[in-house]
Length: 141
Image (cartoon, rainbow, N blue to C red; front, side, top):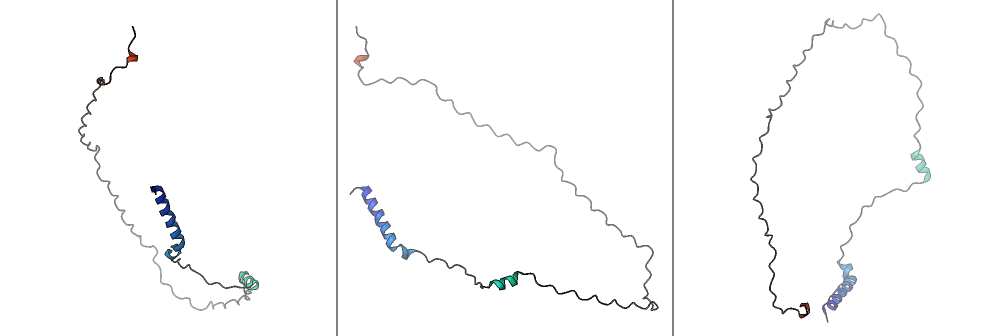
């Protein structure tokens, strides 16, 4: 058997084994949440959705009895004529910005990298061939 046939046979056997025994290897599904609900009739739904009846407004209450004007009114302490001046707090001084120098120090220049050496531009040397010269390339007399 060649390699391709062996690989195919192993893959097919693994697939058949998975189909036969795969259900036993699956994890159990997680339970999902279930909420209980109530079933109501159409009449109950209509009763829930209609606006609640508002009570009828009560008859206007009788006006309270007016107090006797002869009764003494309570004495009120005399208020001073002028209210004392409220002192305003001194405004807080504005914070001064930090002193920033006019010129920032310049970073020290890094040493430039040395230039890469230039490649040699000499033409390649012709190599001597160990083969005999081609007789058809030579001119005839």
